[in-house]
Structures are given as structure tokens and as C-alpha cells.
Image (cartoon, rainbow over all chains, first blue to last red; front, side, top):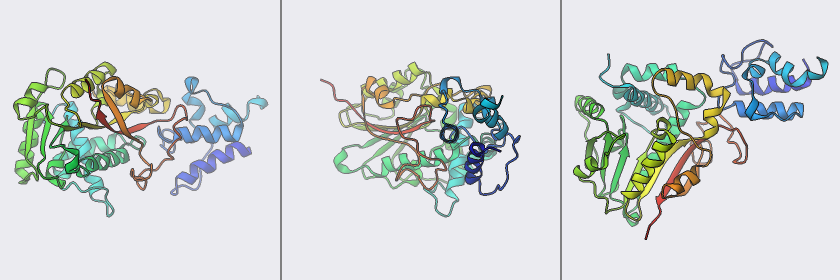
Amino acid sequence: MNSGVAKVKDWILGRHAERDELAPEENIIDSRLVDSMSFIELIYVIESASGAEIDFDTIDLADFQSLAAIDRAFFSRGAR
Amino acid sequence: MTALRPVSLTAEWMAAARAVESEQADALFVDPLARDLASANGFELLDKYPNGGLRQFIWIRTKFLDDSVTGLRPADGIEQVVLLAAGLDTRAFRLDWPAGVVVYEVDHGPLVEEKQRRLDRLGAKPKVPRHAVAADLTTQWLPDLVRAGFDPGRPTLWIVEGVTFFLTPQQAADLFVTLADASAPGSRLDLDILGGALLRNPFSRAFLDAMRADGRPWLFGTDEPAEFLAEAGWKVRELKEPGQPGIGERRWPYAVQPRDRRGANRLWLVRAEVVSRG
């Protein structure tokens, strides 16, 4: 896991004291680890870790549904 | 089977949320009637919609609007308080009301009747002169309020809690114009309004779709509540969000986003005063 995704993972686990692990493919939306109020914080964590700017008007929920999806969408583009 | 219509199921849902908070050791408020008023329906809905921050918001909003009532001072000159679409609100029974104030609870007839039945069964006694007004808020309801004793010539505190979500933008604008027209100088309007971004947020979609499917769609929100209310004749005195200092910060599990941050879900808590004309 690259360091950017690790920061995202740390942020999610930091919000959920009951959890100490998060699998790359676990759906963080269905499991409510990230919800409609905290998503804005997730976006800023991703922006801060990736240096990318996320356009709110074209957000695709699929890009945020797991650590693996976030990795593919925001951290591994150059490797594709 | 319930005697209440879908929007009244929402009232039971809100009562269930108030019941849960009331039973916390460090509760923001205590509503001893809420659990019985909510019935099983309310708790089912509370479990069905565990969406981000909703129950915390209900708690914080309740406290914010409680403070609007208990913070009234004789110098404010407000002796009538109107709870619009009051639902199963029990402020008349649980708050310490300033002397000389009369409260009007407005909601549709079947809810008013069912609420009274439940209150009677619980032996609840109001702590303030209270008038329950059966009216249809989608039509000309003001005459019903006046017939119950409301005087548009005297300053009023209007409390519009959890109402505008369910209106179209035009209905919301019309409502606040109606209230301004019925407000003597010194009148206040305290309420909550959804942020506009919340209604567009893809992370809200599952919740919003479920609300729509259940017949209670959220329709209206704005990211510029002060401007919206100004158009209708109201000047915002306080514009707050949950989690700010003094606004339920120990209950709010999210970071308060700076106002200039685009795309953030906002849940506005507002205190406004009528703009005097002429």
C-alpha cells in the first residue's frame, strides 16, 4: 500500500476506535465508515495526500467505496 | 397500524430521537414524554435511517430551539410563540417558560388529535397557556391561528423546526413571506435549514432516495440561508452549525467545515428577526 492510501486508512481507522484493521476491498460507504457528513473530510484527506484537486461536480461514488478504489482513482494513475 | 400520516411518522421519528438523548447521563435536554409519544414507529425509523449525523443533529437542533424559548427576556417583548408543524413537540410541557407567554402549536388535524389523545393518556399538563391549532400548512392557515387567539399585531417568536426540508424552494420562500407579513416589529424566526450541497452530495444519495421512496422526500436546501431569508423579509441574527462552540460540540462527531469550503454538507441553525417595513 502506498503512503497516500495509508494516510486515508489511518484517517478512517482514527475515526473508528472499534476498528483496528480495514481490508483494501471493504466497502467503506455501505459499512458507514464514511458517511454523508464525513465524506468532505475524506476528500480533503485524499487531496492532501495525493496533491490532486477533486471536482465536487463530477464525483463518482465508485471511486470512494474502498481503499482499493481510492488507490486506483487517486494514487495509482501513473502506474496504469 | 398507525393513525398518523407519513409526515407524522416523521414526528414520531423525531420524538424517538429526543427520547434517546433524554436518557443520556449528560443529556442536552430531557423530554420525559418523548419515548411514549414516539411509539414503536418512531424507533423503527430511527434505526432505519442511521444516516450521517442525523440523530445528533436532531438533538442539537432541539437544544438550540429550546434555548430560543428559555432565552426570551421581558425586554424582548415577545409574548406569543408559534411552533409550526409542531409534530410531537413537548416544549410546552417541559421547558420553563417566561411569564406571560402563550404558545400555539400548529399542525394538521389528525396529528393534533392523536397527539392530544396520547398526552391525555400520559396525564401531561402544559407549563404554559397552550393552544393546539389544527391547520393545513399547504393552504391559508393563518386565519386558523388568528381564530385560536394569535395576534399579528404583537411580536412573535416563530419556531420552524424540521419543516423546510419537505417544502419546495418556492413553498419555503412563500412560508417565510407569510410569517413576515404576520409579524409585528420585534418578531423572531428561529429554524433549521438544510445546506444545498447536502442535497447534491453523492454520499447522501442512498439516504435521500430512501426518504423519497418512503414518501417524505427532502426537497429544499440552500448554501446561502441569510440571503434566502432576506428575500422573504428576515434578517439573520445568528447562523450556526452543529459542532460549533456552544452548539452541541460534545455530541457532534464531525469536523466543522470552514464556511468557504465548497461541497460540505451544511445543517444550518438560524435565529432571525423580522425586517421592519415602512
